[in-house]
Image (cartoon, rainbow, N blue to C red; front, side, top):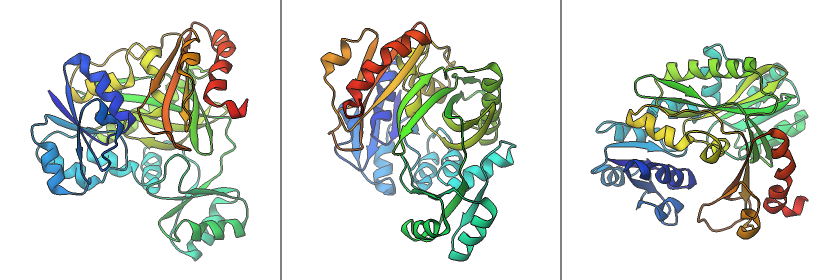
Length: 366
């Protein structure tokens, strides 16, 4: 069976690596001839909005998925006219717009921070009056890894950010004094079968995920059940198929929805070594209509992103239980070029050995 993937980054690369044991073959479509997934599968270079490129990409494929959420919805719908596309384009459409995704989740009864649409200077004033300060002013579309947003503490900062972010198509969100940031990976198959990974604790800096701890330290059954209930509502409402990542702010024992990603997710990379079935394998199982694999954790895991730095492979692999994943990308500041996972049998052992890997991943901060 031949699977098409829109996007040729590291997530597509890892999907292919997970699919080869199942006898699958892969074709990627990406605008860049340097896309790293091309190292492990057939790469077609073309624009996502080019119908001729899409037709050539689709020829001979059995189904299509995608590895990032900014694929044009029109491209997914165009392909869906002739072959299965999972997750459904409707999920892509919701997740691409911060205003729409928050309204969608709130409509399902899932708590979110206060938010208001902002398209004009007067609309900004009204939103500030309703949401209050401090707040986050964000573009509704296209932002990732901290891009397209600004923390504003005063009216003057909000006005400056409004123009800096384009002056329209924005959303103002209340700043949440959260206990921590957590995320949940949910997976739903073509027959409606659903499975959930444990909540993970995420640490960001400069808007980029740096570290995930799985399961989240101190995770309670109540918190896990609450996250699963929220995710189940979204999966069912969207008729979802595949892996869906939901990010939350934890405030005490409550969860506030932040955003979703209709794809495999950076905060789930720990599952490659730390779960019975990785998120990548389960995404493929789901879209192929195969039984889902166990999401049970194998001990306690940490995932450390490598951002704009290539560590000494020998030093990383000298840490017992460390697994290095290098994406084959050119190293540039702020770019995700790989990750390391570390697994231990107890949270205490993980906490003891994790600083060694953090020192290798970010030596300037040690």
